[in-house]
Image 1: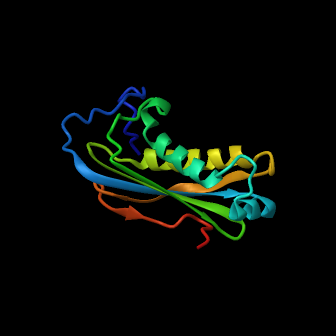
Image 2: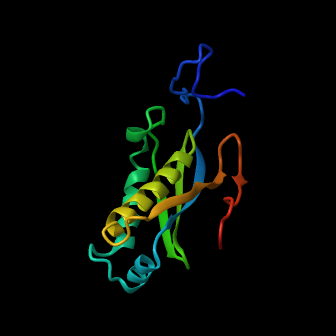
Length: 161
């Protein structure tokens, strides 16, 4: 197996994408925040003391997608041309899905994953006073399109619809 961010000597380096042509690419990631029934009720009723948790989480996820090169040292600076963060209250968790789009030389999988995770962290930050046991679970890429490797999709293990 060859890792693209390691050179022949095994040292980390940033892959040179200069010669690649920009193409339309997208990636979708999903994740969950497990939390107490009390938090889910407060979210449904808009009664969390810190305010509109879902709006803050959504905006945090979008902002995070644009900051990936600042967080991941080998990530390329690319144009995030579209980012949607959808949050849904389910029976026993909060479901988060982010889709990021670009027309650039490399994919946006890390941007989608970062959007989901930071949205989840923002949600936890806003509810931690009510539920200190909230946590992120089942986070991963569920689809990508474009680029040399083409289209790909999967369901996360244990995913609930």
